Amino acid sequence: MHDETAPPTALTIAGSDSGGSAGMHADLRTFFACGVHGTTAVTAVTVQNTVGVTGLVEIPPETVAAQIDAVASDIGVGAAKTGVLASAATIDAVLDACDRHGIGRGGRTPFVVDPVAASRSGEPLLRTDALDALRHRAFPRATLVTPNLDEVRLLTGIDARTREDLLDAAKAVHAFGPEWVLIKSGHLPDDPECVDLLFNGTESIELPGPRYATEHTHGAGDVFASAITAALAKGASMPDAVRGGKRFVTRSVAEAYPLGSGVGPVSTFWRISPRSY
Ligand SMILES: Nc1ncnc2c1ncn2[C@@H]1O[C@H](COP(=O)(O)OP(=O)(O)OP(=O)(O)O)[C@@H](O)[C@H]1O
Ligand SMILES: Cc1ncc(COP(=O)(O)O)c(N)n1
Image 1 (spheres, protein in one colour):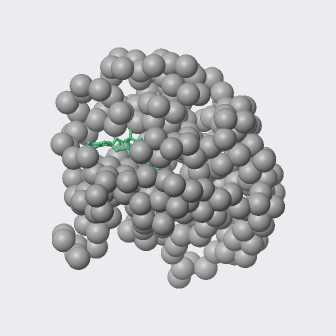
Image 2: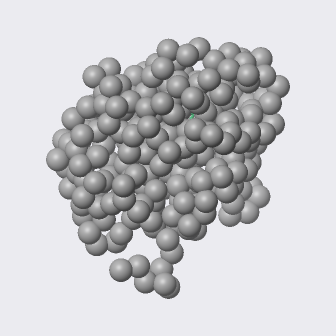
């Protein structure tokens, strides 16, 4: 039972990033900044910094499922999101555990599937055997799927190159059965703005935003999906959660900072106070 004096809770089912920029580290920072208590089911440990990923160790699928069971049976889950899911076996274990606790379509708990396939620096974070499991088993259970344009290409074969292509991309992902699809436009070449698209099969909603001239966008996708998940945990409708998440990630990209010698992270410090470091 959720005590009214406690904050809402959200669960991230994702990989760790030793550099602290992406993955579940970005998710937990975002949950905190959005006033939500974050819980975790670690799927993989990555050896990662701002330059790239040099190692990935998968957590046994039964241990991933046990973490979900431990959290859901005691603390509860207001909303859940996925990041790195690593393999088809992990996806199956996660979905079975989610079914046990009413997470996803058919249950009462919103389930955001961020189909992370590779790092910002290009290293694979998902086995190729997992693509079909994502498409045919995870997507139909998702309340929201949030691919970037590289993931759209990998999952549907659609090569979106202009803003006008985003609706076709959204329709192709929606055909796998999620309730809502959010196509992220950060990787659109030559577009002066970052206009993302939210689609549910009938309604399509444009999410306008500026494009900042920064290379430091490590973790942007994780922060966006986590801010949406936090809003869903607080009871927001999907369009409101995504609009709020877009404002959150836009400000986080605006205040991104350099770190190490590679791609720095988007910032969540601004939510506490400007330049609170
Ligand atoms: N340079 C930028 N300026 C402003 N907003 C941006 C920029 N780059 C990405 N965004 C926004 O950040 C969010 C994440 O988009 P993106 O397409 O980069 O996802 P992603 O590839 O999953 O993220 P990541 O950079 O973590 O790999 C979207 O709302 C996108 O519009
Ligand atoms: C553990 C983990 N999860 C997700 C990402 C994707 O984030 P990005 O696309 O910003 O590299 C990552 N690099 N590492």
